[in-house]
Length: 182
Image 1 (cartoon, rainbow, N blue to C red):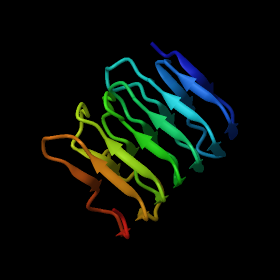
Image 2 (cartoon, rainbow, N blue to C red):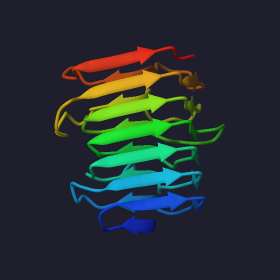
Image 3 (cartoon, helix red, strand yellow):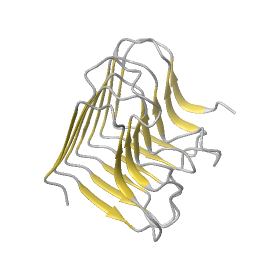
């Protein structure tokens, strides 16, 4: 139960203009504690097997993730984008459940660190398994400080009928700048 479209074991990788779909996890990285993962102009869909431990994109403990100009959608039970990277730059993506997706969170930055999330379109569907679109540090703040979240110029849509917190931020975060979002 570890079938990944790509299981990245080395230090750093660039993914560009690719389409990953219907894998247990579409992209899965290792935990080298260093390296830069750049993912751009790619599509990730229908990742997961519905158990909450498989995802569209799962980034382990690396130095930096840059995720830009991508379309990640219809995650099946896990996260649409989950990252344990120390630095996350998430720019100008469509990260969505659409009408039938079942993601837990759209973006889950599990262990804090630094994050710039800007210019994205986020849409949580009616079948979402979690009340948050974005989680920052839900598993604690074990990444190196600073623990800063900049969530700017995003469009967030919630179609889930029950209670929703758009963004869940751990209490120990030093900066939480959430501004100019729709």
